[in-house]
Image (cartoon, rainbow, N blue to C red; front, side, top):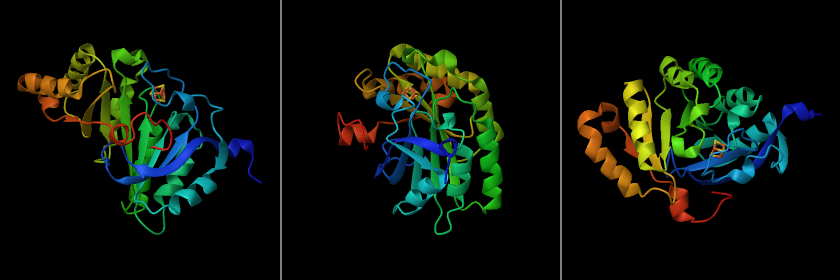
Length: 246
Ligand code: SF4
């Protein structure tokens, strides 16, 4: 019998096209955890912020069985906020050890939770399983228009440097011109990063073309901006207005 402390609140789980991140366009098995302590102004999964939004309480083994039985190469752990789940390291450890195929496990995290312990763990796991599966962070660094910029932990950027992986990305979601300037300053201050940098518009708030124009305008004096990548949320293009299952 698995006790309630050994279960995780799941808002939803499904297979769909990965709408963003380094694996955008590929199929992934999504596990969306219920609960997030932030309150971003543009949150598109606000219903999943409630820790009791979970329609299911599942054990690590139940989640692993479900993930391993999906015909995909990618697993996306999202929310809500996955790092608010105490059992997340156990889940990652089990997923990495998939006996049948290498999996790319992506952890989408909001920048306010300390990733260092998990980043160190994935390094150990990578060594232990001969590097077949990968664990990557998509670190969603909040901009001023989110209202959550003050909650970001600078140590998370250091963690990406200390335990680097080609599977990592720093995601900067911009809703205003001020956000774009803030993102550029952040990148310039951070200096060279060992991960991809993704610039993404807040849907309906900032024209993606404005980001492209900003990148072209400032590339001459921002080395890090030159290496950044504009990214659109594919799922919002494919299924506009749909909040769940995508
Ligand atoms: S971190 Fe993500 S889930 Fe949490 S409020 Fe912000 S957008 Fe929503």
